[in-house]
Image 1 (tube, rainbow, N blue to C red):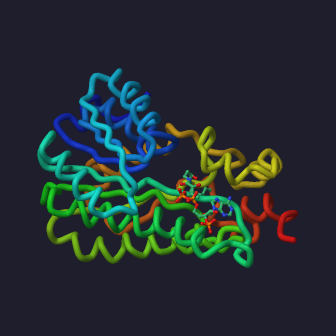
Image 2: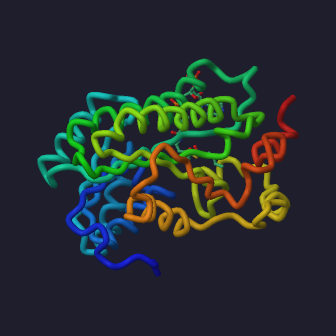
Length: 270
Ligand code: HXC
């Protein structure tokens, strides 16, 4: 159950990359429950169709678009289609991400480029392509970062570099786009139960051991991420821009060598 009033986003339009699964799908559902028209963009058409059907159960209007966030022209077309269908865009979430555990000395240049391309370039592409279609003033943009942005972590050079870049991009863009009435913020989740990201990083099976050592000794739920994503587009955050909320139970307080990636990767470096 949400603490926000029903219909908080009624008449508004939200565009969410990576919206067919995980945290981004949870946010899409929360926004749809609160009355928004929701566009989900992701690569896999079958996953998208299933997600759209699920979201339509809320009664909201849903559009699904299959595209890769590394393809700027495809994003331009997706925003044009969204504008034509729903009008000006109120909320954009750059949520699409890719990740895997790999030591940098063995990672191919293409593997590094794949994560930088999806996460960092994909975030720029999404926001840049949205710009001419945003409601100004009033639009709110969000990124989904990770503790890797501030915690250097072995096996995660690509994700650390990408997420650090994203957090920097948010701050610079917030300065530039603020005067037009566009706010840009982000959430940095730690481990979130039931997500592909956690599954990929916890393949070493040390989850239970690790989460008990966190300041808040558990992982988060997708619903907790969705509630924060609602708060960040609500009037509660009207005077907030260029900020990344660490919604990580204190994970980022502990530093890089303490990270999940390290625990899971410590036996795999040879
Ligand atoms: C080493 C790998 C690899 C792995 C792929 N590659 N997986 N290298 N270890 N496990 C290499 C490939 O060999 C290839 O290099 C290059 O990466 C690109 O591979 P493709 O399969 O062509 O990649 P692509 O289709 O671009 O897919 C990108 C991906 C993929 C990142 C590799 O796994 C993906 O998109 N995943 C999305 C789902 C996901 O992970 N979501 C959760 C994100 S969580 P070569 O040289 O062979 O061509 C997140 C937050 C983390 O980001 C923080 C949580 C705490």
